[in-house]
Amino acid sequence: MAEFVAFIDALVAAAGADAVQTGEAIPARHHTDWSGAAPVQPLALVRPRSTEQVAAVLRVCSAHRVPVVPQGGLTGLAGAAVPNADAIALSLDRMHAIEAVDTAASTVTVQAGATLQAVQEAAAAHGLQFGVDLGARGSCQIGGNLATNAGGNGVLQFGMMREQTLGLEVVLADGTLLPMLRPMIKNNTGYDLKQFFIGAEGTLGVITRAVLRLHPAPRARATVLAALAGFDEALALLRRLQVRFPGAVAAFELMWRDFVAASLQWQSLREPFDATHAFAALVDVTGADEESLRTALEEVLGESMEAGEARDAVVAQSQAQARALWKIREATAELPANMHPPINFDVSLPMAGIGRFAEACRAALDARWPANVSLFFGHVGDSNLHISTDASTVDGDEAGVERIVYEQVAACGGSVSAEHGIGTHKKPWLGASRTPAELAAMRAIKQALDPLHLLNPGKVFDLR
Image 1 (tube, one colour):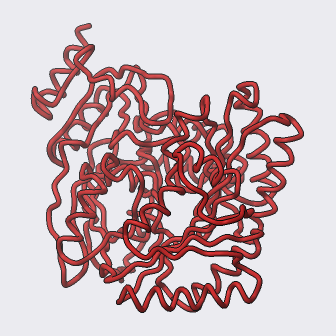
Image 2 (image 1 turned 90 degrees about the vertical axis):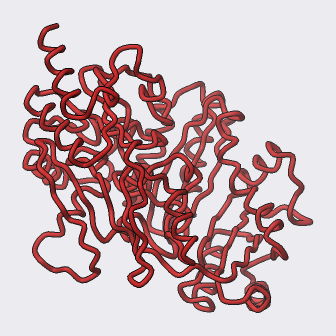
């Protein structure tokens, strides 16, 4: 008890009395994240207000050999932010400043606790846009987005968080500060150290600030929902659009019929076409003028229909119509209420093989559970496929469903995590996408940067 009191006193000295909570004073939201993992009450919750306080807290934890679990907006789906009972939870939510927008360089400097939406709004106020967008934009934080190398809707046009990042400020496990906030695109001065921390899920260091790239905001955006008979036709349409609108295809969301039917039913929406089709692709294209953009898009769709790719199409004539079309794709918010519970997958595969993978997965699931309800949808244009299976239709056998899906992923040379990270949930399957040599290299990096293994222990991979 005396050692615990001394530890808490040291944390208070490092971050201030108002920044440290213990026991029942710790809000329940800090016990878990959106992954559905069982809640765990940490040893303490610490909410620093500055990088200096983060460094001081980590020095205290290092001296006392107490593990640290970094937390952002707690919107992760892989369990990376779930605390350990013997660790402190380190929340960056008080470090939420948008420090500077440089319109000449098209960059923004932010603290790690700033929400994605706050960054988007700061960019928009200067006629710019940030290249990443997620459904959790109002809650997720930039530090967590970086720690998981988040993707989302803008990846096809701008890339993942990694591609948006010019500089980082990071605190290592022993409190050492790495001041890597350099805003230059060209900077070949040895190892690009910031890349170690993007996607590391808080296991190598705590990200405290970032310099992010911004892009000119488009003057116009056109949205279309296209009906397609097959996956290959969907890829042909995507290629046609990218040739006609180079660099301007902002989204290509492909939905298998099972997903469309479920979305329409759950949300009481009307069928978008006169007939049902095997696939529907929701496409956003950006440009300089809305009317001319829609005209050009309609021309491309006509060519696609003549080529036997698209079977039908609806081009939104207003932003309200565009939002109505997007509502079909955004049925993912309805999954928890309509599946009991959903077993969710976030995988990526070589693009040309996604259709065959989906067919093989569906056949394997149907063979094991003929009445299973499984929905297929995804970004696809960036090789990302999502699958959601209703656990109540597979006898609650989540492990069995995971085995089928991830074995198929391994056979196709894909990734068990496209954009959600590994955390604890996917840790048993990491070997399906990484070789023993790659895992050994990861462990060597972890040992070098966190030799006491204090940062987010038990996440991503085991150290043995």
